[in-house]
Image (cartoon, rainbow, N blue to C red):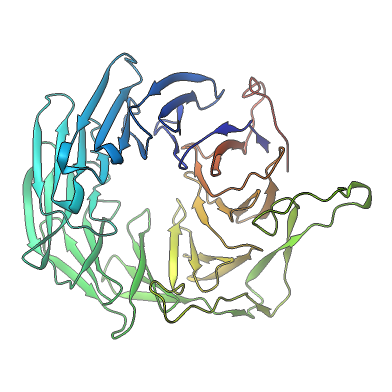
Length: 458
Protein backbone atom coordinates (compact mmCIF):
# COMPACT_ATOMS: atom_id res chain seq x y z
CA UNK A 1 0.00 0.00 0.00
CA UNK A 2 1.44 3.34 -1.07
CA UNK A 3 0.68 6.97 -0.28
CA UNK A 4 1.13 10.13 -2.31
CA UNK A 5 2.49 13.36 -0.97
CA UNK A 6 0.14 15.75 0.83
CA UNK A 7 -1.69 18.52 -1.05
CA UNK A 8 -3.58 21.55 0.23
CA UNK A 9 -7.36 21.40 0.50
CA UNK A 10 -10.30 23.51 1.71
CA UNK A 11 -13.71 22.47 3.03
CA UNK A 12 -13.12 18.77 2.26
CA UNK A 13 -13.82 19.48 -1.43
CA UNK A 14 -12.02 16.75 -3.35
CA UNK A 15 -13.67 14.50 -5.95
CA UNK A 16 -12.66 12.06 -8.66
CA UNK A 17 -14.23 12.51 -12.07
CA UNK A 18 -16.82 9.84 -13.00
CA UNK A 19 -14.51 8.42 -15.71
CA UNK A 20 -11.67 8.15 -13.18
CA UNK A 21 -9.17 10.20 -15.21
CA UNK A 22 -9.11 13.35 -13.10
CA UNK A 23 -9.08 14.53 -9.51
CA UNK A 24 -10.54 17.95 -8.66
CA UNK A 25 -9.76 19.74 -5.39
CA UNK A 26 -10.42 23.22 -4.02
CA UNK A 27 -8.08 25.56 -2.17
CA UNK A 28 -10.07 28.61 -1.09
CA UNK A 29 -11.14 30.22 -4.40
CA UNK A 30 -8.92 28.06 -6.64
CA UNK A 31 -10.00 24.88 -8.43
CA UNK A 32 -7.16 22.44 -9.13
CA UNK A 33 -7.61 19.58 -11.63
CA UNK A 34 -5.00 16.81 -11.51
CA UNK A 35 -4.31 13.65 -13.43
CA UNK A 36 -5.70 10.90 -11.18
CA UNK A 37 -2.68 8.63 -11.86
CA UNK A 38 0.30 10.95 -11.77
CA UNK A 39 -1.29 13.77 -9.73
CA UNK A 40 0.25 16.29 -12.11
CA UNK A 41 -1.72 19.55 -12.29
CA UNK A 42 -3.60 19.75 -15.61
CA UNK A 43 -5.71 22.86 -15.06
CA UNK A 44 -5.92 25.64 -12.50
CA UNK A 45 -9.07 27.77 -12.41
CA UNK A 46 -9.73 30.87 -10.32
CA UNK A 47 -13.23 31.58 -9.00
CA UNK A 48 -14.61 34.88 -7.76
CA UNK A 49 -14.85 33.80 -4.12
CA UNK A 50 -14.33 30.80 -1.86
CA UNK A 51 -15.78 27.60 -3.33
CA UNK A 52 -18.39 25.93 -1.13
CA UNK A 53 -19.57 23.11 -3.40
CA UNK A 54 -17.88 21.09 -6.13
CA UNK A 55 -19.48 18.66 -8.60
CA UNK A 56 -18.43 16.90 -11.81
CA UNK A 57 -20.78 16.52 -14.76
CA UNK A 58 -21.66 12.89 -15.56
CA UNK A 59 -19.46 12.89 -18.70
CA UNK A 60 -16.46 14.36 -16.81
CA UNK A 61 -16.22 17.31 -19.23
CA UNK A 62 -17.41 20.10 -16.92
CA UNK A 63 -16.97 21.08 -13.27
CA UNK A 64 -19.51 23.06 -11.28
CA UNK A 65 -18.32 25.34 -8.47
CA UNK A 66 -21.00 26.89 -6.24
CA UNK A 67 -20.30 30.10 -4.32
CA UNK A 68 -23.33 30.19 -2.04
CA UNK A 69 -22.35 33.38 -0.22
CA UNK A 70 -22.42 35.30 -3.49
CA UNK A 71 -25.34 33.44 -5.06
CA UNK A 72 -23.06 32.40 -7.92
CA UNK A 73 -22.29 29.22 -9.86
CA UNK A 74 -19.20 29.02 -12.07
CA UNK A 75 -18.77 26.21 -14.61
CA UNK A 76 -15.42 25.22 -16.13
CA UNK A 77 -14.62 23.08 -19.16
CA UNK A 78 -11.74 20.61 -19.33
CA UNK A 79 -11.80 20.38 -23.14
CA UNK A 80 -11.85 24.16 -23.60
CA UNK A 81 -10.09 25.77 -20.61
CA UNK A 82 -10.71 29.27 -21.96
CA UNK A 83 -14.50 28.69 -21.91
CA UNK A 84 -16.39 29.34 -18.72
CA UNK A 85 -19.93 30.02 -17.55
CA UNK A 86 -21.18 32.18 -14.70
CA UNK A 87 -24.72 31.92 -13.33
CA UNK A 88 -25.86 34.65 -10.97
CA UNK A 89 -29.08 34.08 -9.04
CA UNK A 90 -29.05 37.68 -7.86
CA UNK A 91 -31.25 38.70 -4.95
CA UNK A 92 -32.96 35.28 -4.92
CA UNK A 93 -29.80 33.80 -3.40
CA UNK A 94 -28.51 30.25 -3.63
CA UNK A 95 -28.56 27.35 -1.15
CA UNK A 96 -27.99 24.31 -3.41
CA UNK A 97 -26.72 23.51 -6.90
CA UNK A 98 -26.40 20.27 -8.84
CA UNK A 99 -26.00 18.84 -12.35
CA UNK A 100 -28.72 17.14 -14.28
CA UNK A 101 -27.74 13.63 -15.48
CA UNK A 102 -27.05 14.83 -19.04
CA UNK A 103 -24.34 17.21 -17.82
CA UNK A 104 -25.78 20.13 -19.78
CA UNK A 105 -28.29 21.54 -17.29
CA UNK A 106 -27.76 22.98 -13.81
CA UNK A 107 -30.44 23.01 -11.10
CA UNK A 108 -30.12 25.88 -8.60
CA UNK A 109 -32.25 26.11 -5.47
CA UNK A 110 -32.85 29.67 -4.27
CA UNK A 111 -32.91 30.85 -0.66
CA UNK A 112 -35.91 29.82 1.42
CA UNK A 113 -36.56 27.13 -1.24
CA UNK A 114 -38.77 29.50 -3.20
CA UNK A 115 -38.00 27.81 -6.52
CA UNK A 116 -35.56 25.70 -8.50
CA UNK A 117 -34.06 27.29 -11.60
CA UNK A 118 -33.00 24.98 -14.44
CA UNK A 119 -30.26 26.54 -16.59
CA UNK A 120 -29.31 25.07 -19.96
CA UNK A 121 -25.66 25.37 -20.99
CA UNK A 122 -26.51 24.58 -24.62
CA UNK A 123 -29.47 26.84 -25.37
CA UNK A 124 -29.06 29.29 -22.47
CA UNK A 125 -32.75 28.79 -21.74
CA UNK A 126 -34.16 28.95 -18.21
CA UNK A 127 -36.98 26.93 -16.64
CA UNK A 128 -38.51 27.30 -13.19
CA UNK A 129 -39.90 24.71 -10.78
CA UNK A 130 -41.97 26.05 -7.91
CA UNK A 131 -42.55 24.87 -4.33
CA UNK A 132 -39.46 22.70 -3.69
CA UNK A 133 -39.48 21.43 -0.13
CA UNK A 134 -36.62 22.09 2.27
CA UNK A 135 -35.80 18.60 3.56
CA UNK A 136 -32.91 16.15 3.90
CA UNK A 137 -33.19 14.78 0.37
CA UNK A 138 -35.75 16.50 -1.81
CA UNK A 139 -34.30 15.87 -5.29
CA UNK A 140 -33.50 12.49 -6.83
CA UNK A 141 -32.76 11.38 -10.40
CA UNK A 142 -33.25 7.90 -11.82
CA UNK A 143 -30.00 6.06 -12.55
CA UNK A 144 -30.60 6.23 -16.33
CA UNK A 145 -31.08 10.00 -16.10
CA UNK A 146 -34.56 10.04 -17.65
CA UNK A 147 -36.65 11.23 -14.71
CA UNK A 148 -36.43 13.66 -11.81
CA UNK A 149 -38.52 13.31 -8.65
CA UNK A 150 -38.98 16.45 -6.56
CA UNK A 151 -40.47 16.79 -3.08
CA UNK A 152 -42.82 19.77 -2.82
CA UNK A 153 -44.67 21.56 -0.06
CA UNK A 154 -47.75 23.64 -0.86
CA UNK A 155 -50.92 24.45 1.07
CA UNK A 156 -49.45 22.73 4.14
CA UNK A 157 -49.30 19.37 2.34
CA UNK A 158 -46.52 17.24 0.86
CA UNK A 159 -46.42 16.39 -2.84
CA UNK A 160 -44.08 14.68 -5.28
CA UNK A 161 -43.67 15.79 -8.89
CA UNK A 162 -41.97 13.65 -11.52
CA UNK A 163 -40.38 15.45 -14.47
CA UNK A 164 -38.96 14.21 -17.77
CA UNK A 165 -35.35 15.39 -17.85
CA UNK A 166 -35.18 15.71 -21.65
CA UNK A 167 -37.59 18.67 -21.76
CA UNK A 168 -38.43 19.28 -18.05
CA UNK A 169 -42.11 18.61 -18.65
CA UNK A 170 -44.24 17.44 -15.73
CA UNK A 171 -45.04 13.73 -16.00
CA UNK A 172 -46.85 13.02 -12.73
CA UNK A 173 -47.92 15.02 -9.70
CA UNK A 174 -49.39 13.40 -6.57
CA UNK A 175 -49.76 14.06 -2.87
CA UNK A 176 -48.09 11.84 -0.29
CA UNK A 177 -49.60 10.62 2.94
CA UNK A 178 -46.86 12.15 5.07
CA UNK A 179 -46.99 14.64 7.92
CA UNK A 180 -43.58 16.15 7.16
CA UNK A 181 -41.79 14.47 4.26
CA UNK A 182 -38.08 14.09 5.02
CA UNK A 183 -36.63 12.44 1.90
CA UNK A 184 -37.17 10.67 -1.40
CA UNK A 185 -34.95 8.27 -3.35
CA UNK A 186 -35.36 6.23 -6.53
CA UNK A 187 -34.48 2.56 -6.53
CA UNK A 188 -31.38 1.96 -8.68
CA UNK A 189 -33.54 0.37 -11.40
CA UNK A 190 -35.72 3.52 -11.54
CA UNK A 191 -39.00 1.63 -11.09
CA UNK A 192 -39.87 2.52 -7.48
CA UNK A 193 -39.65 5.75 -5.51
CA UNK A 194 -39.18 5.54 -1.74
CA UNK A 195 -40.68 8.40 0.32
CA UNK A 196 -40.20 8.64 4.08
CA UNK A 197 -41.57 10.84 6.82
CA UNK A 198 -39.72 12.85 9.44
CA UNK A 199 -38.43 11.24 12.61
CA UNK A 200 -41.66 12.15 14.44
CA UNK A 201 -43.68 9.58 12.51
CA UNK A 202 -42.49 6.18 11.29
CA UNK A 203 -43.70 5.86 7.69
CA UNK A 204 -42.15 4.69 4.41
CA UNK A 205 -44.22 4.94 1.22
CA UNK A 206 -43.32 3.24 -2.06
CA UNK A 207 -44.62 4.65 -5.34
CA UNK A 208 -44.43 3.45 -8.93
CA UNK A 209 -43.27 5.68 -11.76
CA UNK A 210 -46.87 6.60 -12.60
CA UNK A 211 -47.59 7.71 -9.02
CA UNK A 212 -49.43 4.64 -7.74
CA UNK A 213 -48.90 3.78 -4.08
CA UNK A 214 -47.42 0.28 -4.04
CA UNK A 215 -47.02 -0.15 -0.31
CA UNK A 216 -46.78 1.65 3.03
CA UNK A 217 -44.62 0.46 5.91
CA UNK A 218 -44.80 1.44 9.58
CA UNK A 219 -42.78 -0.47 12.16
CA UNK A 220 -44.11 1.25 15.30
CA UNK A 221 -45.87 4.39 16.54
CA UNK A 222 -45.50 7.11 19.19
CA UNK A 223 -41.73 7.13 19.17
CA UNK A 224 -38.88 8.58 17.10
CA UNK A 225 -38.94 6.83 13.75
CA UNK A 226 -36.69 6.75 10.66
CA UNK A 227 -33.10 8.00 10.72
CA UNK A 228 -31.52 6.58 7.54
CA UNK A 229 -32.58 4.80 4.34
CA UNK A 230 -30.59 2.93 1.68
CA UNK A 231 -31.42 0.87 -1.42
CA UNK A 232 -29.39 -2.19 -2.35
CA UNK A 233 -27.64 -1.83 -5.74
CA UNK A 234 -29.87 -4.57 -7.20
CA UNK A 235 -33.06 -2.77 -6.01
CA UNK A 236 -34.10 -6.00 -4.26
CA UNK A 237 -33.87 -4.61 -0.73
CA UNK A 238 -34.65 -1.38 1.06
CA UNK A 239 -32.83 -0.93 4.39
CA UNK A 240 -34.41 1.38 6.96
CA UNK A 241 -32.39 2.54 9.95
CA UNK A 242 -34.49 3.55 12.93
CA UNK A 243 -34.11 5.43 16.20
CA UNK A 244 -34.83 2.23 18.12
CA UNK A 245 -31.40 0.93 17.06
CA UNK A 246 -32.66 -1.56 14.48
CA UNK A 247 -32.38 -1.92 10.70
CA UNK A 248 -35.42 -3.33 8.92
CA UNK A 249 -35.07 -4.90 5.47
CA UNK A 250 -37.97 -4.76 3.02
CA UNK A 251 -38.10 -7.04 -0.04
CA UNK A 252 -39.01 -5.86 -3.56
CA UNK A 253 -41.71 -8.50 -4.21
CA UNK A 254 -44.23 -7.86 -1.44
CA UNK A 255 -42.57 -4.81 0.16
CA UNK A 256 -42.90 -6.55 3.52
CA UNK A 257 -40.19 -6.78 6.14
CA UNK A 258 -38.12 -9.94 5.76
CA UNK A 259 -35.86 -9.38 8.78
CA UNK A 260 -34.65 -6.83 11.28
CA UNK A 261 -31.12 -6.38 12.57
CA UNK A 262 -30.58 -5.24 16.16
CA UNK A 263 -27.43 -3.63 17.52
CA UNK A 264 -27.03 -4.93 21.09
CA UNK A 265 -24.15 -3.71 23.22
CA UNK A 266 -23.18 -7.30 24.07
CA UNK A 267 -22.08 -9.77 21.38
CA UNK A 268 -21.91 -13.41 22.48
CA UNK A 269 -22.45 -15.44 19.30
CA UNK A 270 -19.22 -17.37 18.52
CA UNK A 271 -20.02 -17.25 14.78
CA UNK A 272 -19.57 -13.47 14.81
CA UNK A 273 -16.05 -12.10 14.46
CA UNK A 274 -15.37 -9.01 16.58
CA UNK A 275 -12.29 -7.04 15.59
CA UNK A 276 -11.10 -4.71 18.34
CA UNK A 277 -8.62 -1.98 17.54
CA UNK A 278 -5.70 -2.07 19.96
CA UNK A 279 -2.83 0.33 20.35
CA UNK A 280 0.54 -1.03 19.25
CA UNK A 281 3.31 -0.68 21.80
CA UNK A 282 6.37 0.76 20.02
CA UNK A 283 9.68 -1.14 20.36
CA UNK A 284 11.79 0.01 23.28
CA UNK A 285 14.45 1.47 21.02
CA UNK A 286 11.92 3.53 19.06
CA UNK A 287 10.38 5.50 21.94
CA UNK A 288 10.20 9.17 21.09
CA UNK A 289 11.83 11.67 23.47
CA UNK A 290 10.52 14.17 24.09
CA UNK A 291 7.07 12.64 23.52
CA UNK A 292 5.04 14.00 20.57
CA UNK A 293 2.75 16.94 21.22
CA UNK A 294 -0.73 16.18 22.47
CA UNK A 295 -3.51 16.15 19.88
CA UNK A 296 -7.28 16.08 19.94
CA UNK A 297 -7.65 12.36 19.21
CA UNK A 298 -6.33 9.74 21.61
CA UNK A 299 -4.56 7.86 18.82
CA UNK A 300 -3.32 10.54 16.44
CA UNK A 301 0.33 9.48 16.50
CA UNK A 302 0.51 5.90 17.74
CA UNK A 303 0.05 2.88 15.50
CA UNK A 304 -2.68 0.36 16.05
CA UNK A 305 -3.74 -3.12 15.00
CA UNK A 306 -6.83 -5.29 15.08
CA UNK A 307 -7.24 -8.14 17.53
CA UNK A 308 -9.97 -10.77 17.37
CA UNK A 309 -11.87 -10.58 20.65
CA UNK A 310 -13.01 -13.64 22.53
CA UNK A 311 -16.68 -13.99 23.38
CA UNK A 312 -18.62 -12.49 25.00
CA UNK A 313 -17.79 -8.92 24.01
CA UNK A 314 -19.24 -5.76 25.54
CA UNK A 315 -19.15 -2.77 23.21
CA UNK A 316 -18.64 0.75 24.45
CA UNK A 317 -21.98 2.60 24.54
CA UNK A 318 -22.89 6.27 24.78
CA UNK A 319 -25.68 7.51 27.00
CA UNK A 320 -27.62 10.14 25.03
CA UNK A 321 -28.60 13.46 26.53
CA UNK A 322 -32.35 13.21 27.04
CA UNK A 323 -32.86 16.98 27.23
CA UNK A 324 -31.28 17.83 23.85
CA UNK A 325 -32.54 17.69 20.29
CA UNK A 326 -31.21 15.09 17.83
CA UNK A 327 -30.12 12.54 20.43
CA UNK A 328 -27.22 10.28 19.50
CA UNK A 329 -29.27 7.13 19.25
CA UNK A 330 -30.44 4.98 16.38
CA UNK A 331 -28.89 3.79 13.12
CA UNK A 332 -27.43 6.94 11.61
CA UNK A 333 -25.52 5.41 8.70
CA UNK A 334 -25.94 2.35 6.51
CA UNK A 335 -24.63 1.27 3.10
CA UNK A 336 -24.78 -1.82 0.90
CA UNK A 337 -21.68 -3.27 -0.75
CA UNK A 338 -21.61 -3.04 -4.56
CA UNK A 339 -22.22 -6.78 -4.95
CA UNK A 340 -25.29 -6.68 -2.64
CA UNK A 341 -23.70 -9.27 -0.34
CA UNK A 342 -23.03 -7.07 2.69
CA UNK A 343 -24.59 -4.20 4.63
CA UNK A 344 -22.51 -1.90 6.87
CA UNK A 345 -24.25 0.03 9.66
CA UNK A 346 -23.42 2.37 12.53
CA UNK A 347 -25.58 2.68 15.62
CA UNK A 348 -25.02 6.18 17.00
CA UNK A 349 -25.34 5.02 20.61
CA UNK A 350 -22.42 2.64 19.97
CA UNK A 351 -20.33 5.28 18.16
CA UNK A 352 -17.05 3.35 17.93
CA UNK A 353 -18.43 0.29 16.14
CA UNK A 354 -19.22 -0.65 12.54
CA UNK A 355 -21.52 -3.63 12.04
CA UNK A 356 -21.25 -5.76 8.90
CA UNK A 357 -24.19 -7.98 7.97
CA UNK A 358 -24.30 -10.89 5.54
CA UNK A 359 -27.35 -10.20 3.34
CA UNK A 360 -27.30 -13.68 1.78
CA UNK A 361 -27.69 -15.35 5.17
CA UNK A 362 -29.42 -12.39 6.87
CA UNK A 363 -27.14 -12.48 9.89
CA UNK A 364 -24.42 -10.48 11.57
CA UNK A 365 -21.02 -11.37 10.14
CA UNK A 366 -18.53 -9.06 11.87
CA UNK A 367 -18.18 -6.07 14.18
CA UNK A 368 -15.28 -3.63 14.05
CA UNK A 369 -14.80 -1.72 17.31
CA UNK A 370 -12.54 1.29 16.97
CA UNK A 371 -10.78 3.23 19.68
CA UNK A 372 -12.34 6.48 18.43
CA UNK A 373 -15.74 7.49 17.12
CA UNK A 374 -16.43 6.36 13.55
CA UNK A 375 -16.75 9.49 11.41
CA UNK A 376 -17.39 7.91 8.00
CA UNK A 377 -17.29 4.65 6.08
CA UNK A 378 -17.66 3.90 2.38
CA UNK A 379 -17.67 0.76 0.25
CA UNK A 380 -15.30 0.46 -2.68
CA UNK A 381 -17.14 0.75 -6.01
CA UNK A 382 -16.00 -2.56 -7.48
CA UNK A 383 -15.32 -5.00 -4.63
CA UNK A 384 -16.78 -5.62 -1.16
CA UNK A 385 -14.07 -3.55 0.50
CA UNK A 386 -15.02 -1.10 3.25
CA UNK A 387 -12.93 1.95 4.18
CA UNK A 388 -13.44 3.56 7.59
CA UNK A 389 -12.06 6.73 9.18
CA UNK A 390 -12.29 7.98 12.76
CA UNK A 391 -10.69 11.42 12.60
CA UNK A 392 -7.24 10.06 13.47
CA UNK A 393 -4.13 9.49 11.39
CA UNK A 394 -5.21 6.04 10.22
CA UNK A 395 -7.51 4.51 7.66
CA UNK A 396 -9.14 1.12 8.25
CA UNK A 397 -10.04 -1.41 5.57
CA UNK A 398 -12.32 -4.44 5.86
CA UNK A 399 -12.97 -7.20 3.35
CA UNK A 400 -14.35 -10.74 3.75
CA UNK A 401 -10.73 -11.88 4.12
CA UNK A 402 -10.12 -9.69 7.20
CA UNK A 403 -9.31 -6.13 8.16
CA UNK A 404 -6.28 -3.91 8.60
CA UNK A 405 -5.34 -0.63 10.26
CA UNK A 406 -3.04 1.56 8.15
CA UNK A 407 -1.07 4.50 9.48
CA UNK A 408 -0.92 7.49 7.12
CA UNK A 409 2.82 8.27 6.92
CA UNK A 410 4.39 11.71 7.04
CA UNK A 411 5.27 14.45 9.45
CA UNK A 412 2.65 15.83 11.80
CA UNK A 413 -0.83 14.48 12.38
CA UNK A 414 -2.91 13.89 9.26
CA UNK A 415 -6.40 13.54 10.72
CA UNK A 416 -8.62 11.69 8.23
CA UNK A 417 -12.07 13.31 8.43
CA UNK A 418 -13.53 11.92 5.21
CA UNK A 419 -12.63 9.70 2.27
CA UNK A 420 -13.70 8.92 -1.28
CA UNK A 421 -12.91 6.02 -3.61
CA UNK A 422 -11.56 6.18 -7.14
CA UNK A 423 -14.17 4.69 -9.55
CA UNK A 424 -11.84 1.74 -10.21
CA UNK A 425 -11.53 0.98 -6.49
CA UNK A 426 -7.71 0.90 -6.74
CA UNK A 427 -7.09 4.11 -4.81
CA UNK A 428 -8.63 6.18 -2.07
CA UNK A 429 -8.53 9.92 -1.36
CA UNK A 430 -8.04 10.68 2.33
CA UNK A 431 -9.27 14.13 3.36
CA UNK A 432 -8.27 16.18 6.39
CA UNK A 433 -9.26 19.70 7.35
CA UNK A 434 -6.55 21.43 5.28
CA UNK A 435 -4.92 18.66 3.22
CA UNK A 436 -5.52 15.47 1.26
CA UNK A 437 -3.46 12.58 0.01
CA UNK A 438 -4.06 9.45 -2.04
CA UNK A 439 -3.75 5.90 -0.80
CA UNK A 440 -3.02 3.35 -3.56
CA UNK A 441 -4.23 -0.14 -2.75
CA UNK A 442 -2.95 -1.89 -5.88
CA UNK A 443 0.23 -0.81 -7.60
CA UNK A 444 1.35 -1.69 -11.11
CA UNK A 445 5.01 -1.70 -12.11
CA UNK A 446 6.24 1.59 -13.44
CA UNK A 447 3.01 3.41 -12.64
CA UNK A 448 2.49 6.35 -10.25
CA UNK A 449 6.19 6.78 -9.52
CA UNK A 450 6.54 10.37 -10.76
CA UNK A 451 5.35 11.93 -7.52
CA UNK A 452 7.26 9.65 -5.15
CA UNK A 453 6.06 7.45 -2.32
CA UNK A 454 5.49 8.66 1.19
CA UNK A 455 5.34 5.23 2.71
CA UNK A 456 4.35 1.62 2.41
CA UNK A 457 2.18 -0.52 4.62
CA UNK A 458 0.90 -4.04 4.09
